[in-house]
Length: 219
Image 1 (tube, rainbow, N blue to C red):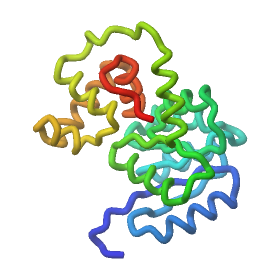
Image 2 (image 1 turned 90 degrees about the vertical axis):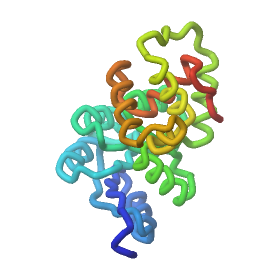
Image 3 (image 1 turned 30 degrees about the vertical axis):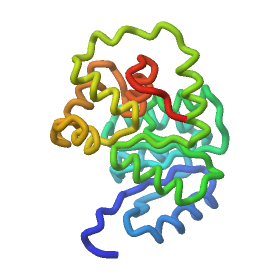
């Protein structure tokens, strides 16, 4: 590993020790990912996130003491800059929607290849949305089925442009390049949009953009 590689600091939150062990073993081989801690339930995950301030939390959904959805909501309320990728063994629309609405920026399945989990962490760190293809299809179907979304008048034309690109899963850097603005300006737009619409994450913004027909659903 070279010193100029920016390492993504990751906290693992899963009640199965063997899952955490396998993930840590794989991530230890990655030059850009560093596991800074492990937690065995949602409550411990929230406490360790406060203490360690990781870049990305890899969060299981079904855990004792505090489930993943509750933990995601608490982390995003206290540390909104922390990105959270949900990893679970099933696809259930209610759970998927709850996790994303709580502020998760990615959703992968436990039977995914380890490299896909790593890519989801890298995407979250880069400010991108990463959803398992099956999850993306589920959400696309849900959005297509919804009728009469709220009007988009609260957004300016430029903010609608940003939302359209967010809906396509673009990072701040990519949005800046597309709109000929700086990455920092793009980040400011995204932050302002989230505040204006009362959204907790870029993933929620992407779903909002699809729901309001500013972007086409993927998957």
